[in-house]
Length: 139
Image (cartoon, rainbow, N blue to C red):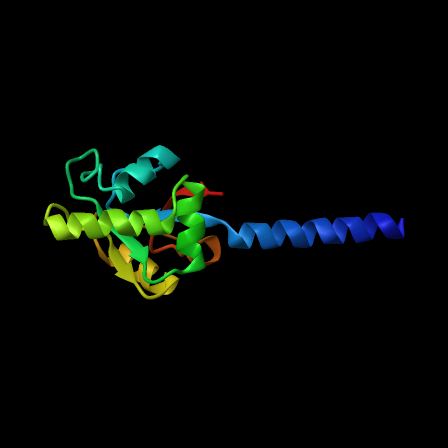
């Protein structure tokens, strides 16, 4: 019986730790989308999708530096943060695209997404709050 409760406690701790480390994709409440698939998210951050279904502009938000959340996020989409940064730099140099806005922290990402119509970003699930809408969970 003691082993059962020990196993239950360990399982609960592992589950809670995993849930807290999940990354969610958040959007401004004006965005006319309630769910996104990984491919659509990658298309947005690869600058292939520039508008929401209603024609309003997509404003992509990311994290500065080599934040582990950003590395984990892009890895879950099948790419690397470094590859995305190279793509964005190339687009900037060519003057063709507006690259994602880079914020200093996950709290800044939430605040910017909440205050910017058409914005999309990603944060750890624990950082998301009611000022934004969660449209995907990436693992």
